[in-house]
Image 1 (cartoon, one colour):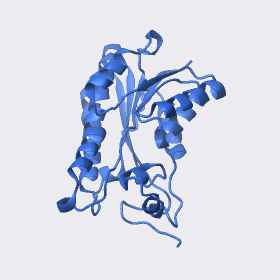
Image 2 (image 1 turned 90 degrees about the vertical axis):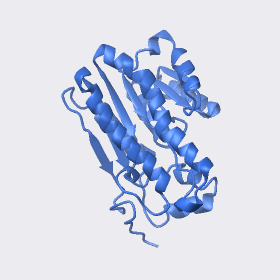
Image 3 (image 1 turned 180 degrees about the vertical axis):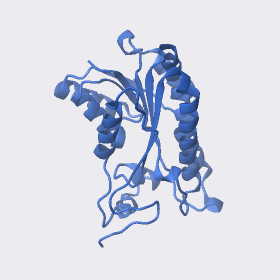
Length: 253
């Protein structure tokens, strides 16, 4: 059995695809998320299809006490976490700053920034003690550029970029790798969540182009995990061929 990997936001999209690929490649997995039924379904698939050693942690990453309770509850064989994949994140709303919803803002800040900090705070000390570990943060092109009406979402992903750099510096003396993957357009539940369940609006985001999918990012994560011990890819920006920047996209229709 390979390393133990904790994946946040494993119930869909990039997180789910990553769990399946790493399970296929014999990693021991801790999968986390808010939707217990989806976690159980994923766990059942991983065990039946690949014989994966898997543990479910069902919690809301925005609540520190829930996160701590979940980490403290890990069975002994899962307590040593070798890799932390900070994947949980979302966009909520797409409004200009003067019309923005406070609820949307707080959901994004609490999930994308504070949630990432909470889980990292609880997992990184054991990596420091062992002088070994790997943290992979899933950022976004929105952490490199801002775009119209993206204001707070872009700010949270800029925070992920800054935190990734800061983590790398703070953890450098302990031999811990820290990487960021910053995707462009990925066809997951991202846009459905952003538009509060409006599937028509969500579908229009990807209309006329071939976007990335969760499996594309999972492939990159597996590649990072297989780099030699002395190699750390600090930052990786990945786009669909039809996208050159946050706002420059070519559509065929």
